[in-house]
Every structure is written in structure tokens, then in C-alpha cells.
Image (cartoon, rainbow, N blue to C red; front, side, top):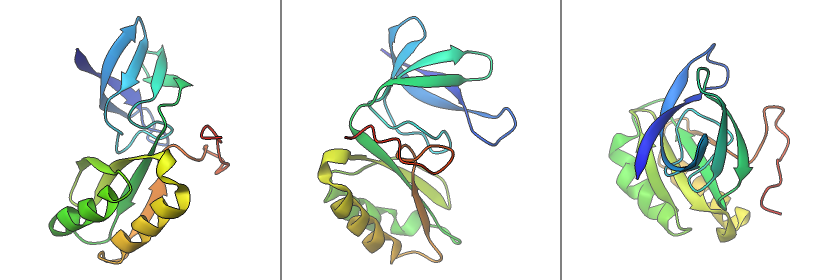
Length: 148
């Protein structure tokens, strides 16, 4: 059974985002969809909530997926079907979007070279795009290397 828990949004001074999860055991959850604003996790990861009030958590098992977030200066809504098609070539699935940003879950075993080539192709469709991985680098921009 799935439900939502609130997880901390880094840099937001206490802000949280509801994230759809599957309860595994008390305070331990599997992430069902990569969140747009919460960093460090992707769909399939297993986390332990360490503080329910603030939404702080730790990853206890990585699920083998990367979270990819793409934003643009203007609306991306009309381009989403085409971007979905490009990213589906590497197994990507869109997990959510707003007017200017969207998040996809992509299997890491698709290979970073192929993933990044697809992202580059998708970004060519957008006005002033910016993209980043949601769970590949830590807060100091160092690779967390969970895929090794």
C-alpha cells in the first residue's frame, strides 16, 4: 500500500515535499516516484526517516535509478511528450512536472553516457534549459558513487 510522507527540501529553511512511498517497516520506506524538490533520492530507493517533524532521512539502499530534473526559462509543458519520447529511449519515466520543471526516473544501468546524450537531445527543445541529477552528487557536488 502506498502513502505519502513529507521529506525535507534542502535549502528551503524547513520546507518539505510530500513523496509517495511504500511502507516497508516503521520509519523505513521505498520511494515510488522521484521527487521534484527533494534531493539525494530516486524512485526505488529505500530510506529511513530520521526525523518525522523535519522530514530528514537517510538512504539505506539505492534502487538502481537516477533522478533527472530539467528546468527551462519558459514553459516546458508543450514539449513534455517529445522529451518523454527521447528519455524513454534510455528507460526514462516522467514522475512529475510543473510549468517550468520536470523530473524523470531513469535506470542507471542505461549508462551515464547514453543518459546524458538523451538529456542533451531533450534540452535542445527548450529555452535556456538547465538539468541536474537528483541523486548522483552530494551537497558538496561530489559523486556519491552508489552505482559502483
